[in-house]
Amino acid sequence: MVATDSSWTTRENDSSDREGWGNDVGFMELLDHARDGDRDALGRLLQWYTNYLTILASTQLDRRLRKRVNPSDIVQEAMLEAHQDFGDFRGTSQGELLCWLRTILIHTLHRSFKRHVQVQKRDIRREVSLEAVSNRLEESACNWAGNEPSPSAPMRAREGAVELSNQLSKLKPHYREVIVLRVLQGLSFDEIAERMDRKCGAVRMLWLRALESFKASEDQR
Image 1 (cartoon, helix red, strand yellow):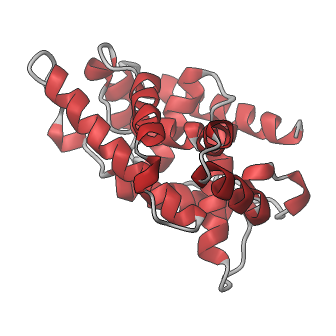
Image 2 (cartoon, helix red, strand yellow):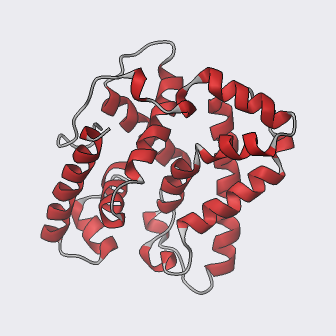
C-alpha cells in the first residue's frame, strides 16, 4: 500500500468501488448547488472530507495534548468555519477545496493550541507539518491503488487520500493510530512505543494486527 513498509500491499484500481466523492460530475454538481445557497448540498460536500481532515488533525496532537484536545472536535470546529466562510472559496476543483479545508484546519489547530498549550506543551521535536502528512497520505493512496503515472495522477492521488482516510476511519482507534504514526508520520517502532506508552514488541504486534484488520476491511468492500 505504501512505500514506507513492505508489509503494505497494492491493489488494482477499480473505479467501480468509489463513492460519490470521487466522481467529478458529482463534485461539480454539489459545488454548484452549494454556491447557489443550498445548505444541504454544502453539508454533503464537506462531509466527504471529514475523515480526511480527522486523520490530518490526529497527526498534529501528541498523546498528552490529545487528552485535552480531541481531533474530531477540532475538525467539527473547522467544518463549522468552512460552512460559515464558504462564500470565500473561489476554487473549482477538489484539489483546491482540499487545500482550502487544510488551511482552515491549520488555523483551527493554532487556535486550539493557544487555548491548551499553557496546560500541556507540545513536543516540538515530534511535530510533522500538515502538508507533509497530506503528501504522505496521497503517496500512500497511490501505492495502495497501484496507480501508474499519468496526467490525471495528482487528482487521483487526492481522491485516493480521501478514500484511504475513509478506510482508516473504520479501524479500531489503536489500529488506526499505529498506522498513522508508522505510515503518515514515519516514526520508528521505538518512537511509536514511546508515543503510545507501550513496549516496542507490543507495538510491532499491534502493527501486524492493524495490517490484518485493514486488509480484512478491504476484502469486505
